[in-house]
Amino acid sequence: MDKIIKGAIFDMDGLMIDTEKLYLRYWKQAAADFGYIMEDKHVFSIRSLARKFSNPLLKSFFGEEFPVDDVRQRRTELINAHIEENGIVTKNGLFKLFDFLKENNIKIAVATATPRERTLLYLNKINVLDYIDAIVCGDMVTTGKPDPEIYLTAAKQLQLLPCECVAFEDSPNGIKSAHSAGCQAIMIPDMTPPDDELMPILSGVYDNLNDAVNYFDGRI
Image (cartoon, rainbow, N blue to C red; front, side, top):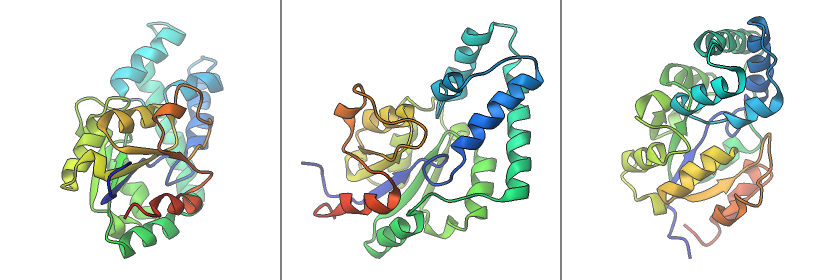
């Protein structure tokens, strides 16, 4: 039986905000701008991965000469321009779940592979900073997802044990990170559903954050 939940740790892209489709679109466009054909499968393989893992993986796909930093910078420029023009869409049920957690004195953290500057920009745009007790970003840890460090750090900042925290993720790499840290790992699939490898390490799977409120029944 999982321990009583005292904290909730959230991935950001694809989980709190509907940005994974932007990464998919603009990774491919940025690569094309440099003369490379990037497919959906390439983008999916690096979801939530720290740069120390994703950069070598991209080079394994496209060759050592692949200008990964330049392509990444171009991708970021394209995404920023899109968000500046269109804003950011939050995922279904985010505010209902955040309100529920606050009403029940559950601490909230964000653990994202996104750099801190961009994370704060996005969280400010969707007006959730007042809900959040701790933020751990990809550039604040030595080894990012799927390593457990980011979730261990988030739990520590909440002054909780990892097993007292439920982690919400949309990607396989994020789920592996949360489970390895000892958190109760909940998947809200966005671009890809859980596979046979992932199912045994999940504490739950829900279609959206609205439905995920049900996980807390009898656990708080």
